View 1: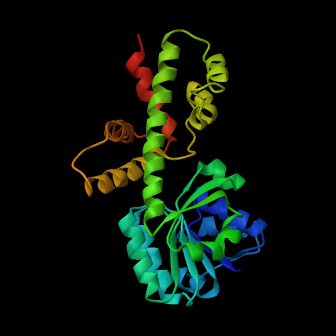
View 2: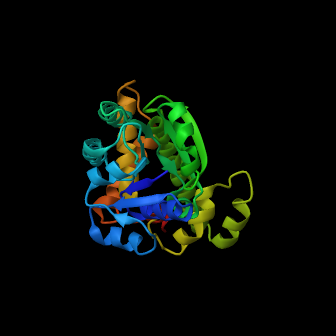
Amino acid sequence: MKVGVIGLGAMGAYMALNFHKAGYLHRIWNRSQDKAEAVAAKTDAGIAVDAESLAAECDLVLTCVSRDNDVLEMIQQIARGIKPGSVVVDTSTVSSDTANQAAALLSEKAAAFLDCPVSGGVEGAKNATLAMMVGGDETVLECVREPLAAIAKNIVYIGPTGSGQACKAVNQIMAAGLNQAVTDALAFGQAMGLNMDRVIDVVSTGAAGNWFLSHRGKTMLADRYEPGFKLGLHHKDLTICRSMLQKITEASLPTLEMTLGHYQRLIDEGYGDEDISALFRLKKKLLQT
């Protein structure tokens, strides 16, 4: 099966490299030519002229872009060249409505669409240990599960088109809550004058242990916020979550609203390109004496 990858940012580039290692990568394309050239230099994949020509040559097209409008723009271009029977897998985080629009556009060309947002950050993309949440036709998923296993360790079918994105919204709200809890707790421990490296070593192995604490705790304490997952992108994702929620209820979620407010403050201060653990910047100020 020939695989093409569109969108070679931090996540997409590693997914392309893992497809290459498994022998599937055929074509790549990115708006910024330098990123495409960097991946091409490490693989035997050719750089497509555009998304349309990439789709014409590949059986499976994976897209990894940032926003709803970007996804729909790419799908429109892909649809102009895609072959009947081909499959498009979108790993972006967008709304369920966008996933349904993309599926409708491709169905007109007798091609299939799966909304497959992923979780695991840059580390997961690099190590091919991503969790993938799949919406669409389950029979289509089974046809492409083997190549997708080259980039994701846990591939779970959630339901019809849009379900993958709804599941990712659950993940993003939960990630916001973990970020709030961990940064609150570490700021408290720091204010208490504890040896925080030792605190993390013991707490991370107990009932309160979690991925975020283990992977971001000590970097936060060292004031290092290299982007594993950019704060600005999580803010975008949580805005999508809010929009999805507003379509079914007038109620709001406290963690969602609080995190959006905190993130906006950090974005306004110029920290939007840092990792979401930069939330610790606010928590430290709150408890400083």
